[in-house]
Image (cartoon, rainbow, N blue to C red):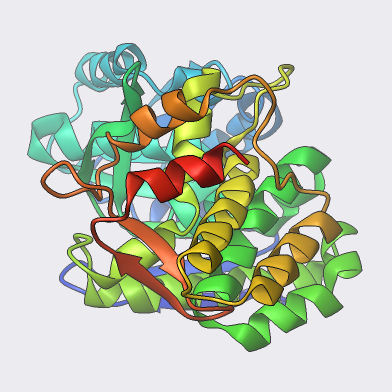
Length: 370
């Protein structure tokens, strides 16, 4: 199997190593897809936006390469509101009806919601079967498909029920980005910007210089941005697979962002609630403002981050109508907290993030109140 031009690959080391392959045309490469299937049972999990565009092609490619496969399919409604215990149950039922054995494989065809749900189902079916991530959104390519964090949401908070389950492979077909709605592309770019903000000032500068090319979906610029983001995540995940320390840095802006998402009721196609990437963009600015207020960083760095996000047409302010007290209440349920005390990812300027324990709630509330 040879990679097409304009391709990249990133190896993720660890107890269960795997490769992230980034290139156009990968969803049609049945030989590559089927090479990751150890048994005969495959569940293809997708959503109502992605499945009509790509599911038939993936199914055809797999069966051409492996006519013996028994292939089931589950399509969920698009949007964060579908990342539920009910849909987790539907995925488990689909695996049971397929007769999936321990060598089965779940293919996650879609964005972060599909990847999280499929990965969690794979982690739980028979105590763990393979999952191949086929991310079709930029956000999933650079973040949620990599690292093995899987989960569903409950009314009390986002990603509170889940498991660590590294994928067998990540296959990112960059052709799917051509059909990605502009808002979803920008949401993914928020996570790309995060990598520059937490540990790579040169990448931060590069993103500013290449902002037009990225927004216009230049293939080389996108491939470079995806690969660089994945290299950063792979490096961190290899050293801290279970998020006991350094991996928490990947959550810059996420504690604030998850609180906004949960309080709004989660974004979905057609509503005005912030999607995940947009909420993280706002959260990163809030984290930077809090860092400056605590004397950790310079206000100029906060402005540089806000300006870069603005250049990519991403929000930087809390949506109107959200109570600061309610948001703080959501933040108290964040998984990074210890002994009931806020533990946040803050920074000392561009490229210098750190985890800060026991953050003063009064200072957080002041930032939330604007």
